[in-house]
Structure formats: structure tokens, C-alpha cells
Image 1 (cartoon, helix red, strand yellow):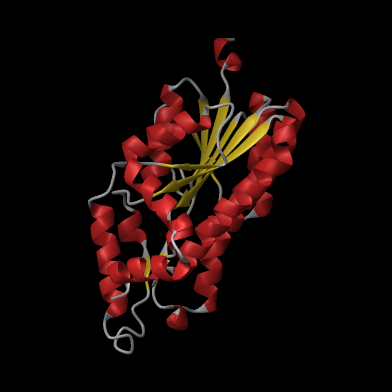
Image 2 (spheres, helix red, strand yellow):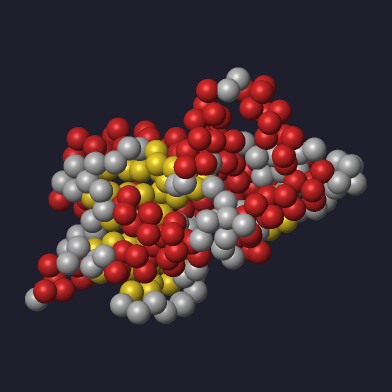
Length: 267
């Protein structure tokens, strides 16, 4: 009877990295946690469901099953995502579309599936994982940056749509995190000669920063804490230096901001 009184959380991309740490943090906080991913990497006390977030029918079916078992979903954390890198000129359109299919439309698919029940129960919090790349606009990661900018904009707009019904939406913009995301990045090195080695240099610098970044356990705990808040800003940034970075990106003239970012990742 006690377990039935616990609130329910759903995390996508929960088999590794930030998603896995968020799953663990929410479970520790007392939630019944379900995780969507294509791989089953067991986490004690967490219910895995093999779901591809780009498959709308599969997402709807899985969310329906959770609602049948639990009656409600109080928290959704959209962590599923991946990165591609390379010059826009040499990135095939199918790869760019795949980036958006997972990072953006995957988020949309799962959010749309849980929204009707959240709206009817007049409570719920959707947390979408974004990146400071949404405002820093990283060269040679243009499609990743664009997909995360879409997630942040979508989250702010959706929050306005559903907040009158007791549902809040937050985009958590992250900086460099030391996870397997770095090794999993799909690197496109075509055109590196034409671009004077700037593609490989820029990506190498980004990976160096990620490998010295924050731990996923700290970030998972942070995300879980944000997810449990009843009232939260539509945009939250993890880490003081990234809060400062986002602030500077918003106030600096676009040309100056571009020169600064370019001096790091596009020289």
C-alpha cells in the first residue's frame, strides 16, 4: 500500500551518464522511477522499458502502461540525446535530421504523451535537458547547438501554455560533463583539410573540456532536485561558471560573442 502512495517519475535516456545518475537520485528521493532507453542496464529499484523516443507509437504505448500501473506521472525528465560534430558543409542532411529526431523531437514525443494526464491531475513537472551550447553556438557543433536551442525555446513556450493547469516545464542547460557522451559523439572529419585542421582542433578542444568537466553524479542530483520543485524558472543552468557564461552570451553583442567562442573552438 505504501508504494502506491509514492509519486512516479519517468526518465528517458536512463541507461547511462546523466540520465542514469538522475534515475538513481530520483529513486533515492523516494520516487517510483521508470526509465526509457534502448539498452537494459539495470539500476536497483528502477523499472526499465525498452523504448526508442523517436518512435511516437512506442512512446504512447509505454506511457499508457505506466499510467495503468501507477495512475499518474508527476515528473518527466527528458535526458535522451546524442551529439554530432563536424562542419555544416560536410554533414549529411540525414545525420542532421537524426540529431533533431532524438534531441528535439524525442523530447516532444515523450512530453506530448505525458501532458494530458498531467494537465488533468493539475500537477506535474517536465524537465528537458538542454545545453549552454543553445546560447554559446559552438562552431563545428552547429546541429547539436541548434537542437539544444530548440529544446530551450520549446520548453519556455510550453511552460507558458501549461502552467495555468499546474504543470511546469524547465530546460536545464548543462556545460561540460565527464560522461560517455564524449566517446559516443559521432565525429565527422570530412573537410578538415579544406578547413585547415580547424574541425579536428575544435572538436578536440571540446572533448578536452568535457573530460575535465563536472561529474554526472553531481548533475544527476541537481536535475533531480530541480525536478522536485513545484515552482521553477523555465531555464536553469547548472554550475556558477556556466550561469556566468549564459549571462554573458545573452548580453554581449553577437559579433563579440562569436569572436570569443570562435577563438576557443574555431581557430
